[in-house]
Length: 212
Image 1: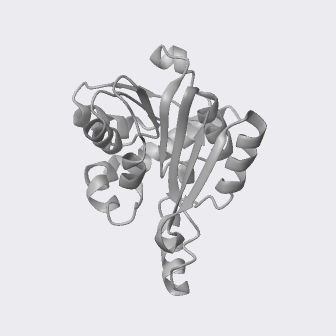
Image 2 (image 1 turned 90 degrees about the horizontal axis):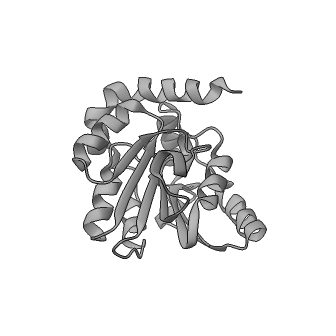
């Protein structure tokens, strides 16, 4: 079990070592809902915003533009992706290498909690994604909120298009988490959180918000 995070980190580095230079250019054509999540963050100056699975830093850069004055933090398991994130953010914010399911916020960032936590198309690539969501919710500061966007069941797409999408995603070790709404509701019930769930057009993506 202890080797699984290391194995996953090696896999992610292998995938992104060659994809990293073209990642943002290609993903904009099928990672929908990210900008909607950013618009709905409702952040204020001084708030600490953490993205788990921050990748190239694209979302963190967009967040700092949309919500001036926030303090950006990013975590990723891939050293390769963090190379791009550091270059994009240019020293703004704090970035760290770590596993989103077990990271220690105090050890990595000197903080016990965050006002906003973002998971953007990350849980579909994290093997133990349920633990990731639970750990993220546990790292919320009082009044903080966890915002998740990821693939839905695409029920509004024609069947051939759904099959093609699934086949494409499998090439990149991506597994849509159709149980996300149930997991979010269970977490909310167990820990007294408010839970909101919305579907994107054609149920291509799903948006989840958990608020402490």
